[in-house]
Amino acid sequence: MILTQISTDGQMMADTLSVMEPGRQSIGLLDLMIKGGYMMIPLYILFVLAIFIFVEKVITLRKASKSPKHLMDQIKILVQGGKIDQARMLCQGENTPVANMIAKGLERIGSPLKNIEVSIENVGKIEIYKLEKNLGLLATVAGAAPMIGFLGTVAGMIRAFIGVAQEEGMVSPKLLSTGIYEAMITTATGLVVGIVAYLGYNYLVTQVSKLIHSMEYTSVEFIDLLQDK
Image (cartoon, rainbow, N blue to C red; front, top):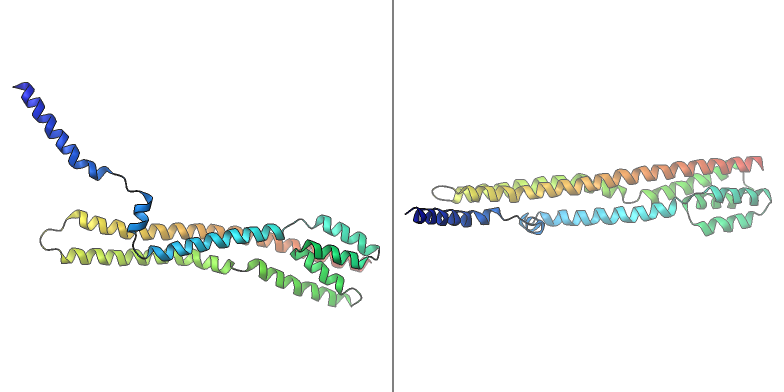
């Protein structure tokens, strides 16, 4: 009798666990991304765009931020020796914002110092524009992604409650909770994309500011060199 009771209790426990088991299954990342709905598509596009802009700007800034110290030392020696053409060819071979500014200044040697300074500033403005290109777009992604995520959540909540309203009789908690968590996926994704884009934007702005400071310092050093010449 006791063995029969134990066997019955064990069978009931096994049945209970088998019923609960499906609820314990974890949801994969891919499943979450799919269940987020159609509003996930623009978020994916914005994420890819943010990564592309960040990588492209990092490569550009690394090429542009080569240390100009050795360049200025060589330019100083060549200019003081009267070898202007060689100095200009040296700058053209570097192909960096600092080198392009100095090359323009070397082309204007013989003109009034004020004209040389203006020419260098104009080239500097063009180079700064190239460095800052697409940074505004990255900032837009950082601001737009969370808002698109919130919009997706609101739309998902509306669909969930419409489904609840159309149900007759008692509403299943699973129906409501499933609609809500699927709607919240877009908010989480939007915040992730926005945070990544925001951090990338601030990092790039910092690097551009450092490079602009280096350009200004080098241009002042070059003007001083011409004054002493």
